[in-house]
Image 1 (cartoon, chains in turn yellow, red):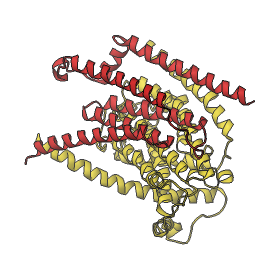
Image 2 (cartoon, one colour):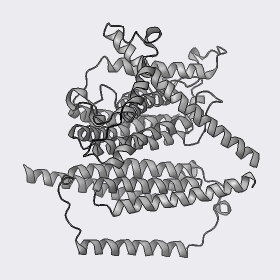
Image 3 (cartoon, chains in turn blue, orange):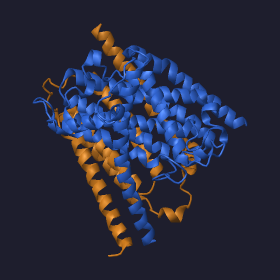
Image 4 (cartoon, chains in turn brown, red):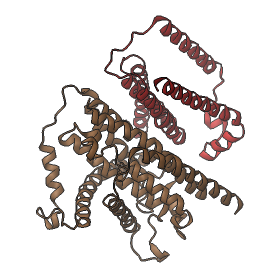
Length: 326
Length: 175
């Protein structure tokens, strides 16, 4: 008993270190990828100077951010201002606990894994609110308020879409949901829920075309206007890590997780398929950002309350009926 | 010191840490005159309660606590703050009758809760049932505790109607 607990602790500690290292590396890579994708979509090469095809550019940028002075505005609320960037990163790290990279590679396979991710994602919104409010800047405050309104509006259809998958599998455990897709991926059985999930996930991570909390053409930089140096860096890291988490959740809920395509055993470890699908989804999210213009705030709200929520409710109802009848 | 007692002590320490967190959060929720601090204090207190559920071994209830109370209720309170007076204006003083009423209400609630806690004959969970899964909770919620469940949703309905009325009323006044 004692020995088992010991190994469990060691497992958790090693896992946490790996998660920390991975989330930083992943964010560095994603920032580079975003700049490359944006560049090529706009018919320019993107960063080219540092490293092959600019691969080391974000590391240089990161070093620059670490070296910069941390400025706290005089009128800011000091405590909250300092706390917000730390708080924004916490839920992101917790999310890694339950993501099923492969049948063996789950840090903690909880029976309510899905709930964990959504329960902690609230803290991101609260951190953005605290940071935006503490900055004592009208653009920051407006960005923070928009972020709260947006996240409430899009969390409802997001959860309803997830609920239809949970109804089909009778489980909130990630490994069981992925296992249930060994034959058919849920994106084929639940295309509406999958689409709703992807749209709402884009909105929840404040990505264009739903990036009105930081809309640079109207709000300077939104909630992080007053942040400098690595405090701004933490918000940035959290956004990109959030993107990874959201894509990973979408992969395991709708795109078959660690299962390969065509249901053929390629003798390739599951983690390869998982990461491949996750990064393809991330690429799609970036593609969307550089293709569509930002929508207005009233359009955003109307779209959620008048289209997404009724649609996801109807989808849930139909799913429940079919599950009951079959 | 072997590893079992070590785990035991750390569990005890985690419990008291969570209790401290909850009480600190509750104090922040009540005393400062900055309404945003109050909300964040409330978040801390409710998250602390969620942590207590976690230390009692119910992941499901703990996450539901976070999802509903932090994710829904506190965000709803943030919306209410957006409708309230600007924060840079001077805060009106706390009126004595209001404070007295709040104290009386909380004392009554506290006494009632403590009374129920003291009168209940507590049986360890393991002796009452061995099945504490999410399925059982869901089953009980729509069978044995269906009425309680419905009454809670009635409270939410009243809150929604109240919010619509308040918002509509103030909008009519300003136009």
